[in-house]
Image (cartoon, rainbow, N blue to C red; front, side):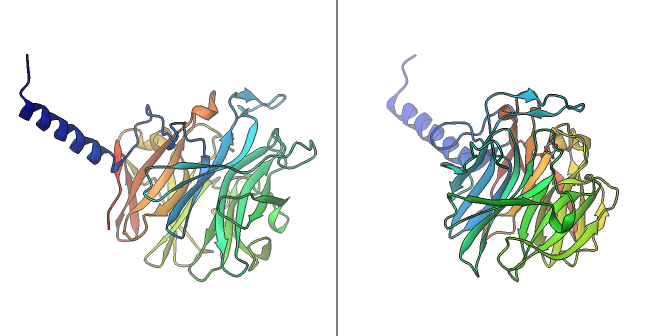
Length: 337
Ligand code: GAL
């Protein structure tokens, strides 16, 4: 059948319209691979988000191609070689430009950031006082025995970040970690400590490079991991996972009036199919869409036997008073205002 010119134009403009509508969404369907502006899969797992000067920066674990099991470890310790920390930038949260590996690994076999080491959950913040960008991350040995928090520094959000050291904050071990700056400029690391049983909230020195010595112990013996922290209307929220390695479990959250607690724990905020397994995901970071009231929780959907192929799922955080829900959505639409 021959189509008239007007019909062809109508089909063409309809296609353009549906394309522009879809372009305003983030596709959450796990069968879809999120790509950067060069068309390559985004490789920024267990990540963190920083907003700086009109740009969002997404940092993450730059996973190596091959997944193997760490030799001599009893539990399912799936690993890839560490490729350092990657960074992607975006103005609109949809189109992500690869800024490169902003913290490179070190070929020195004794280094904490040798490719055989664990470099996980990197987060970056800007320090107004020093004018430096500071990164905190989980540093570990191949069998996760070292359990340390690592810190690196840069003059620019896109690196290069210079690794400084890894430590046991206040003499305690540290695994899953996040890094959060409060409105008054003070910053904290939240880390799973005491054999992952208790979450420590560790105040940092003014330059963000060391623990100040002040910390609180939260959720003792509750084994909370993967903390994602945000603040809304003067309340602090932590969304976290249980402690089952790469396998999914039930999320929980907690709310406090003060960043260092005490936190009141609430059950799983997830709603919808597979909510009891956090949609087969684990929390990575939470953020507010700038200039809007929209809050988003970013998850990893780990593929433990092929870790580089793990996917990203971003969902809205809805509020009812101070309580939250995280409903499943195939697609997340960002608010314009
Ligand atoms: C999880 C943790 C991940 C990774 C994994 C290794 O509990 O949240 O970041 O460390 O264990 O099995």
